[in-house]
Amino acid sequence: MDIIRFIQYIASGTAYTLGVTFVALPSGLILGLILAIIYVYGGKIAARILSVYSTVMRGIPPIVLLFILYFIMSGTINLSPFWAGSISLGVISSAYQMEIIRGAILSVSGGQMIAALAIGMSRLQAIRYIVLPQTLRLAIPPWSNEAAIVIKDSSLVYALGVPEILRRAQLISASTQQPFLAYTTAALIYFGLVLFTNTLLRRLENRLRIPANP
Amino acid sequence: MANKILTIKNLTKTYGNNIVFQNIDLSINEGDTVVIIGPSGTGKSTLLRCINLLTKPNGGQIWLDDEEITSKEVNEDNVRQHIGMVFQNFLLFNHLTALENVKLGLVKVKKMDKTAAEAKTFQELERVGLVDRAHHFPGQLSGGQQQRVAIARALAMDPRIMLFDEPTSALDPELIGEVLEVMRKLSLAGMTMLVVTHEMGFAREVADRIVFMEKGSIVEEGSPEDLFNRPKFQRTREFLWKITELYGKKE
Image (cartoon, rainbow over all chains, first blue to last red; front, side, top):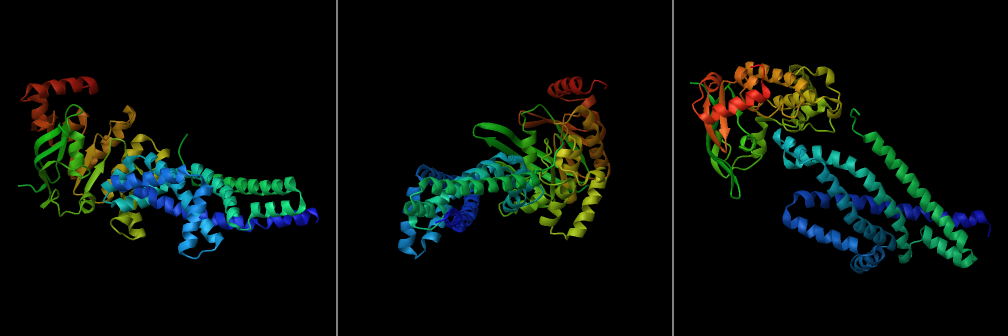
């Protein structure tokens, strides 16, 4: 087997890696965003419950949670390993993203909410038009960290048999006895994806920066 | 008799055992400018926040025109629309330009269409002399300019009354004048205003009535003339003496 076909075999798993990431990251974002808003504005009981949610989800290794969520999901609704794995990673990520967004909401001054209420906006309008646009800008740098983690954690679905990069590297390493080449190739692809994503997000951050005098 | 815009009866606010103010009675006629003065920590700012329903009073009632806004059935968002508020630290929406700051309430709260809202926005920016700064963000404006945009933002909603909470306290001395000038013009144009300030020159020149508050109650109120020249209470005299010495050397 020549080297190009060797690398191609592993690289063709990139589609799955990206697929998992593109499901897990946005679903984690949407869930995390909603939970963060409820956490901050939803009263004491909601905050207490979500604090437990956050602590539990962040206190268990993702691979363990992945198995638990996967077996719950595949036992109730008949999902493919790809979807079950992606959604599980999304749920795990939602706890981290909730904390990122919650922190960002809290660092937007409470005065912004008061000023919005003062011109007659409802709380919901104030959150939508005043608090969130500022929050999401502030959240980009920590969020790009989380994006990198989700890209890397997408490799965990190999344990469910999804033929993504790591799974393929493992298979070809076993059949060709070339583990170093196989895993180095996988490493480089992951690294490239993370680097590309972070560059993209940094550009986004700069483009959305609110102009101010130095 | 002049039309009463704001009537406050027996208003009380406490935090636990700490009484912020107690049994406040105050009424403001249409077109009048009432200035509240007094030492810090006497509940002046909290009083303004209660009027705007941003803080809930523990007792008493407030009427805006003939509507009791402290009643439970009242829609708070709707009430706040009719009460303009200007804050000590401006509180412009940081991610929006001056234009968008003023326009947002017109579009989202008053549901005006974009063209009409924009025309109204420029009219208000004109009033505070900042049309040329319409496309600047708050971070690109001086404190005085930010506060003038904040005034325009409140005015755009066509409020029945404007509340000013120490509008010049966070400003560098050379920027205070431009904000006071806008407020003076506003008062002359017949806007009903309730102003908390330490600017005695402004109070003396612009106010129809001055209210002296201390330790959570109104000590004395009257025309600037009476209060500055013939204060009834020793406390008022001491306070005015202290504050004019601090702020208004020229008087």
